[in-house]
Length: 156
Image (cartoon, rainbow, N blue to C red; front, top):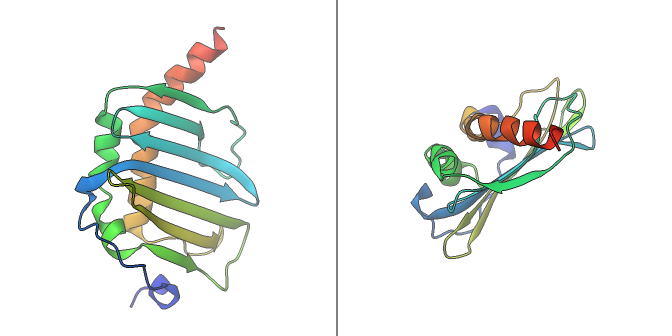
């Protein structure tokens, strides 16, 4: 049994059997009460992003735009294990360090919403690798677009 298995809440009944029906993906990370990352991706290529996800993030500008759907597809391709095994609320009752809250959310094309929520500490074991993979993929898939938006904004 994994560390977080003992804190795993029972997920609500869901009709989603795979990530194929996911139309929107959201990642929100807070550290010590400050939002350090927000990413929203939609299957039409819409991207919203703020922050780096690093504990010391100082980037608070939100960039919203449309790109091709490649970023969305890249993230959706790694969502299946989270949808299958990690929907619900999870927490580390012995969290050490700064308090972190992570939300990985999915919305299907039918409007069904699925959430994987985590509370842990910066000095504690965090979410399982399947959840971290979605977060890292979202950051990587939007990195070039995000840097481009920051550069365009700096030139205004």
